[in-house]
Image 1 (tube, rainbow, N blue to C red):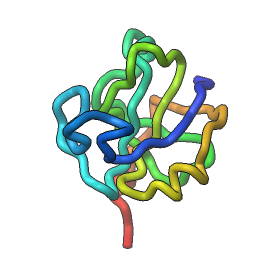
Image 2: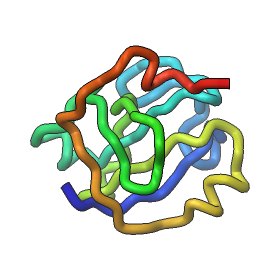
Image 3: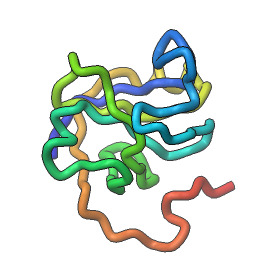
Length: 111
């Protein structure tokens, strides 16, 4: 699926007054491989906890958050507190795959 991608951080000015709790009510922490998706994508194949691969990124990501209703066909890659990395990622068009084979430990960040 082709989508527009941006990145976000756990900062109140980018999320909410509780930036470590997702719109689904899940807790997140820097280092987690999570994405937020626009709500229209939740009507289709992407649901909470769906595992996806993202073009241009090596790790697998889990749908753990949903974006403001104003966004359409968009994902937001979670980058913890690293604002510099989020700005470097910027906005881009990417392809995501959502029926991916999961290998043991492929979602956990490796040291």
